[in-house]
Length: 371
Image (cartoon, rainbow, N blue to C red; front, side, top):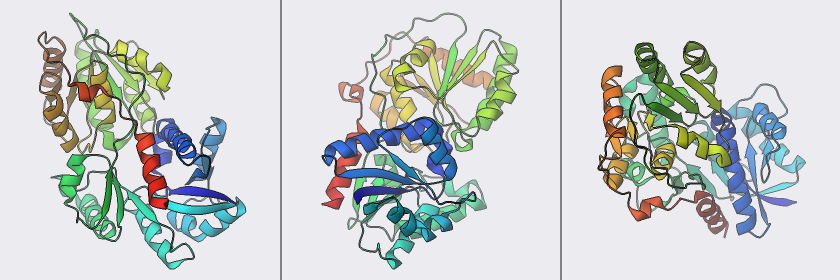
């Protein structure tokens, strides 16, 4: 029997993140094997589509399993958990649930099974306690209430930023590990561009609705129509890629470039090509792509989420400029141009330039929890 750290992806978040997120978990698996000296494997329980994606791309250091059913749901994960683990000769030593909703509920149900003594870690990426999050509509208010109730029943949490921890106001009795999302290890700190003329925007990360894809399309349909020299380069994959293809890339084939998933070793090219990164996520708890952009000496314009406000404190307004959803496309363009052409930009703090190797930190925490 192989011992394993088992991630329960009942909500399908890893699948939705595409290859970017799957490869990140592959790095976690590699570090877990090294940290535990080959003792613990990393296993993801998710959908058949996720299994197929991992198999087709020959993902290493990771075991991806799914219920033997074409219909995927979180109840199926729970009902078939024991069978799946036994069939694959796996003994769970730690369960990791990836969100405080469907996956969080599955984790709580495990307390009524033979796995009740196996430790549970709840990972929280969403900044659901951020000011304004719950007021976006009834759906978000309900998710806020559910998350609050579920999180209160977990004693082991993994968060991704200090701002997220401050917003949640957690009790001292919990074990809380703040481990940021891993950054690319290939930063070479390009010199800032001396730029004249039209600029090239970059958008990098998961292509999902909550990353502001609808707003991105609205802004750039206007900007690109008015200036054919401006370009937008999009790096990343996800369910909204087809929408971007139809509404931007096909309409502006000489201005919009969808790269799909960008391999870590190829990311230098993306950062070399852009002048400024734009982020339109309203509730960014950390901001992985934003921090990578700054490590490559590329400034950022972003909505004022808690993670972005933390970032402004770290690096100052010469690197990060805030925009609002109500800003017109021309105001956003002007702010980006002013930031790109800024000559007297403060140096990034040395501590900020150190790449964050969260795969090592996270694997060390898992091994420590298991004991």
